[in-house]
Length: 317
Length: 249
Image 1 (cartoon, each protein chain N blue to C red):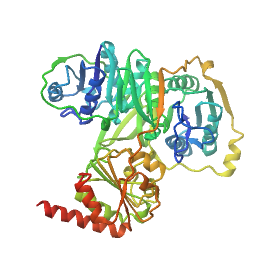
Image 2 (image 1 turned 45 degrees about the horizontal axis):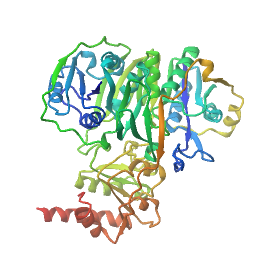
Image 3 (image 1 turned 90 degrees about the vertical axis):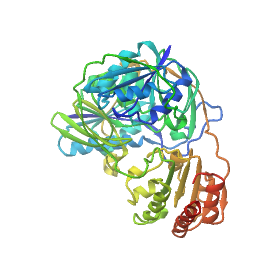
Image 4 (image 1 turned 30 degrees about the vertical axis):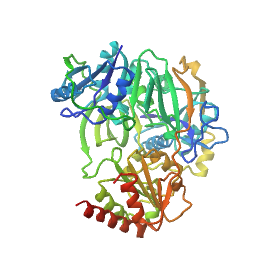
């Protein structure tokens, strides 16, 4: 049987995590169909049809799919699920919101946030914020699976010419209503998807001192993170919190500054590709996960770091 | 108005979780257990609504082994009025938990059901959404602000792109983000008082819910260990290594 992937988009463009989910989905079965449901989303359906791994696009138009409210969206997925062995989406706030509603309506026990496909019914997923990896086998006849985007490469966006099939939608639900969406206006990359993250901990000593971090983040085009201790101390707002109770990040480079490395923080960043720790306490647990540790006073090290980065640019030019 | 709050007992977030040597799970013997952190936010929000005069009763409910009762007791100590404990041993998947909660909702008829957005043990992030699907109620997930407007609820949700505001009809299921509020601590007198509040106990089988797992856990293992890193002497060496060795800047 084929697999069905639910595309996340904004009615104009496909959202990037869908491409990672496509890669994962084709590891389950190569006969991949993608549902593009929205309002005036013809361009999205067309761009999805150009993805070489996609075999067919199901395109649904209705005003009540514009904002992807799950009360209207889940019944649509259920309606078209009949011919599919797997229903798949990315495990970001879009998929996390929608998929369990679909799974419950199908009486399926969902497999969340997989990082590896072992076989069409067996997957690896992190539990305890990545402190353990569980290999699980789903015994449901129809499987609902969400994909951790950072664990799969994005699918190439060209080379394909899949058929686009227009299908009918389902009735609108009127029990919920979309009011507005405020996108965080920032020139900085999102914490969850940034290639480089620089985080400060209690060692920063004040919110004002975070400007040392900001300067480097500007230079590296990095997102700014923080430990729970820094958030609890009021140095920075909690949307920056990295850790088990905050965001889990997997950047190419993670720079931990003045962070001792409490378990709950490590759980949120230790899968990063390269970790740098700057801390004046040489015994701090953060050094046990760091690829490069610098035992130094951050108030001296950070300005020097910025200076060295500036030098690099001069050389490159 | 009546609010049902679901709470789960999990390994405390400050504990270093260790995988069992036989690969069957993680070590829970002699390990500190606590209420799942965002469930504390769910309880707090319910208590705040009751304090504002908009709710009359808060019922705290948990599904789990005998000791899961502790989480209900804690909710009672910060302001819930009574508790329900549905006893189940072993792994209970979110689908089964949501079916159990559906039975409790049908019996209690709350106007709102609150719970944390995700449990920090299995990290599934499913139960609230599944419960609302089974009840055919609206869902407001990852809530960081809740405002009651007559028979509707305006909720600000934490989504990847920023914040989303939705309005849902009541009754509704709300899953709470850590940013929703600052959970209070229970005072000693309130902890003592909570000991007298009633907790009704029942078995999942009494409710006619099959809790047999559909997902087979084949093995649990430690994530791959990181290679030991090095200490650099100064900032210049650090930048040089990042550029030439790790090639990340």
